[in-house]
Amino acid sequence: MGLEVHLQLATQSKIFSGSATTFGAAPNEQADAVDLGMPGMLPVLNEEAVRYAVKFGLGIGARIGERSVFDRKNYFYPDLPKGYQVSQFFAPIVCEGVFEVPLEDGTLFPIRITRAHLEEDAGKSVHDAFSQETGIDLNRAGTPLLEIVTEPDFRSAEQAVAYLKALHSLVTYLGISDGNMAEGSMRCDINISLREKGADALGTRTEIKNVNSFRFVERAIHSEYERQADILESGGSITQETRLYDAEQNVTRSMRSKEVANDYRYFPEPDLLPIVIDAEYIEAVRATLPELPGAKRARFIADYGLNDYDAALLVPNHALADYFESVVTAGGAAKPAANWILGDLAAALNRNETDITDSLISAAQLAGLIVRIEDGTLSSKLAKQVFDGLWAGEGDADQIIEARGLKQVSDSGALESMVDAVIAENPDQVAQYLAADEAKQKKLSGFFVGQIMKASKGQANPQMVNELLLKKLNDQS
Amino acid sequence: MSVSPQDVEKVALLARLAISESDLPEVTERFGRVLGLVDELNTIDTETVVPMSNPHDMHQRLRPDAVTRQNDRENLMASAPAQDQGYFLVPKVID
Image (cartoon, rainbow over all chains, first blue to last red; front, side):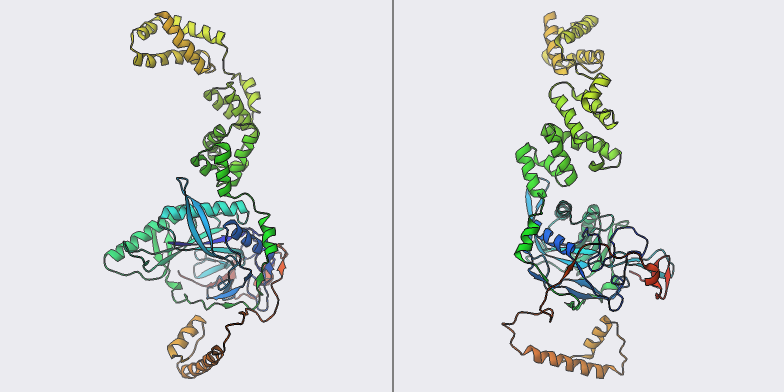
């Protein structure tokens, strides 16, 4: 399999016109004469689109085309008013590179990037709103796209999804796209072909167009694999064609209407001159690159002692990684910080259908909670109560401990009298305990611990209770 | 390079041009003459010539990323043959 990703670049205006690119505007309110393909209109290239493309190229260590050229890709479709799409065919802005994709086990899986080129998005066709006609909305026409093409390096749906997730993380770190798949900011075409066991050559491929979620990519690949395998095993042959994935039926379907049009007759776009990029420009862009996910993952593991699993969950989301680092900077120990963020905090964010940027608990507040666990003020049970207090906006950890009276009792005198009282109140259980063998004793001691914790309203330091209890029980014999 | 009437029909279909049966022989002949000229150009040795994608010896000027166009839908749609609820309407497209 090879993948082609169409990435909408996060520019304010379109690639060749000054129209806005905001998603969700009323139909055709963000399309000017250039986007509509009115006769005589000339494109003027957006500098930010060029910079974003170069940023991407540097992000994957690819060669930047020093002289890239726009071409016309000719086909007729109502949402493409000019009758051609301005794209780059012969000389793309980003040339070959290698993208290292982290797999679940922490290993890196290299995917060869063939190229990435700039082009304009098409408009949208609305088929179901009108009974006799198709509606055309050209707001999306002219939105800058970066089409990222890989070599056929994928052997499984899992690898394809891992690549897409890593790519999503990279482009959001670079700030070149919002990566919002539901709004079409990142769309994936899958080229898939089967190969006979032991054979070198890949079979005839089909292309599945415009899959827009990680889950659908995985399901579309499985479904198309099954379809091709069935045909080949029953002695048939695969037709090279474009297919669409139908998520409701979980099948791919042939897109017959585009078959004849698969001859795009590319030629250089005479309305645009070559883009010339010199070394100075490349170095200036390179200087603006942030720390990228791969480097951050390695640093989190080396500097904070996180394991691959925690790093793999924290790093892909830039805001989450920043939050983690803020907690650590504010004094929270790294491993507990990761646990709280990926555990209770993630659950709370989920329940509230929000994300880390809108967390009701600040990084400093979470750090304050972790400090009080580490210094023994809070047991893990009390810590959960403080966490709930933080989420409810009751102040910082120390204020909540004070207000709710949640301090863990670690005063040995106070604990001792609690232990004495429980032993005195339960002579039968004490007798049972003393008669039992060692394995059974361990189990029975749980009863006393439970009673003591109850008496202390959960505030007794469980470790100290355990030690005191065992000593006192053994003194009874 | 010789061109068959089928080649011409395919190119015409891709370009959405209607060529009548009676015009086809003449168009095919002319089409062949144009390609003959290209064949002639192809005999020139260009090994040492840098490919030219544009006759101007310049490179692309860029514009700042700023929204300079406001909604002008009413004007721009005024000449559309059919429209409804802000959409351009075209004959039903079935995929």
